Image (cartoon, rainbow, N blue to C red; front, side, top):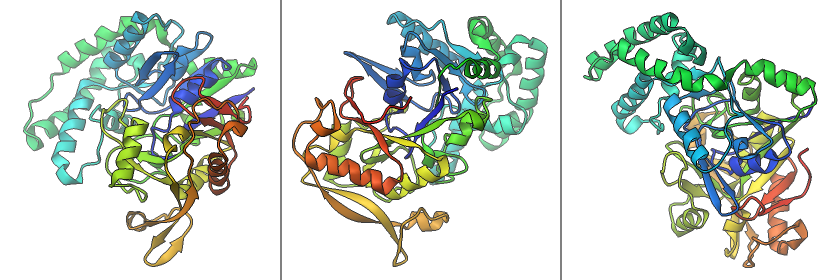
Length: 427
């Protein structure tokens, strides 16, 4: 009954897609359990690069069944477009399963997201403008539209009317926008029903039966630990739970069935959007990390903010997720630095703090305390084992492992599927 959770241990964009894809050939199901098309994954297979936004990375592995769980919010137009693009490139998408309990991102959710963010001005959160937050808000307010509602026109009409009663008041009276017609929304949503029907099922039953039959199930989180709605840098967070607990609620699989929790760590740190970032670099080092690492958001197209590795948030991720292993990515990007600073603690109000402060104000004012580790100049992209790495690169990995609180079981030394050093098997 091997069930594994794979999630981001920083602010997202750590390379989860590559890690999931590497395991895809060894697992039977890959499950997205939260988020929506605000979480992009880049997977490189041979000379082919795939940018996935909503689909689980396992869709690129022929023997794997990709699953969109009940905790995901689904934009039907984006999903169908992504499926079409993969089909045109010869990828078989017929095995995809979608939970009937997943919520639909409606056109009015996208509209509300965009106008609200503009209205906030300098206080904006930095959302992707794709309707993710308003869809989760509708879910919690119990006026959400679920995938299964597409197959009952009467219920769909009632739910859209209920949702738009308040939203049209908001749009017309506060934001000076035109009201959205109920009939128009219902017609658009019904247009997706037939195309999605072959994929929609009771994924909770499917996944639990798979585990009972000794199938290997991998749960894939979007975003990262520090963007978790409960455990992240609130309010500069996403609207769901990318942390390990979210895998259970977002899939309907109980926690006693989870056997391993793998955190993905980038060898440095990045984040997209607003919010505190203690190790952020606004100098030539930051620009070099951005350029060499290709740090541009897969989904947003925005440049990522870059900084040195932060061991404080890595330790925090280990604690709140119960991590059993780390997958360290993009070690190759650090090649060429004579010295590589690593944040080992913060200074807050003149005091050294070694754990993430619970106070938002304290975290905003945290200053990184660095230790410099010796760098390396050798190309490491062809390394096949840990011993192939330069001594200083080995020492860097070991130092990060000790500081972060869980073993590093795999290392990414390049963007390709085969450019990975496996130290300990995840299965």
